[in-house]
Length: 189
Length: 189
Image (cartoon, rainbow over all chains, first blue to last red; front, side, top):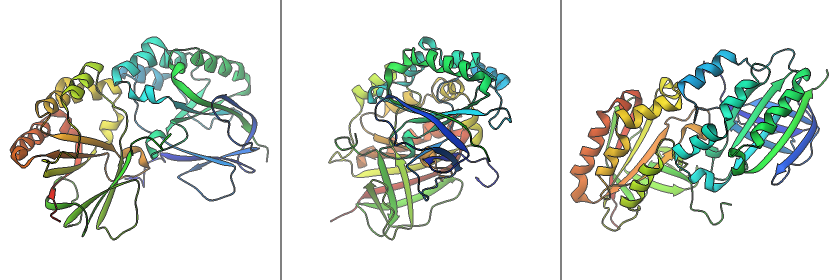
């Protein structure tokens, strides 16, 4: 099946090499990651190389969005890799065990009816492109549940700050127990 | 975190050893698994040993059930490992790419409002105990999406047949592209 499909598994590696230069790494909740100067994004589950840290995640089906929300997202969003996307962010997050013990309807209510997660994201489209990677079910004890990768133009950096600030003020974020905000820019040649 | 937690990752290995004797393995859709005489269930991601096949899955949060459904399930269900559960079944399933492309609300509608997946399961509680393992997000190209493990007394074997027949007749099952039904009994000393 996977021959003709786009990759689903990605490795984010912080170290001395990679196409993105790390300009800031802030632990907003929980343990920070070791310091690194560059970020490499490698399709697949690469485990070799001299990285300071390495995080893996897999793209997957949607967990909360409805058909109507999905249609709005598809109509407004743009893909990764736009030439003017000189800025990016990797935000690894882990939610509490109590969050994961909630049934689906209660997680959905918090995610959207209370926290407006999709609604907030839509306001920043197409400026901010994004890809969500799931980690929690990669194995038994992953350090994070999600890795979200965002790309945007330098002129949209303030808008991106507003986006993450809105989400962090939501009820959903009261269930976040670890969050690192890693800002990067494209490394020169 | 995982030190005091129950295991989430399990390996099911078909081969010449294991606590369960395989009495029948039927490919209901897609490719069968190689023949094996015994089934071993090993906590963790064991990859050594001379198994004919090896399937891994991880227990995870609920994807569809509501608070009301979860409360009903918890009130009626019993755990694995009951002394009179001399029979068991392992049913690995893979759903189509089209299923996974559906938004959450449409998958939920098919799962419960149309197919009555929880409602059907409740009818067979507490006779049939079960543990669901997710595989799809373990990596990029797992052979199955789910491994469900069921345990029941020999006297409830006909009821178990009725349970799986009801589910297989549902709309949800039209999205199943691979399914193996492996029946086992406790191996003697």
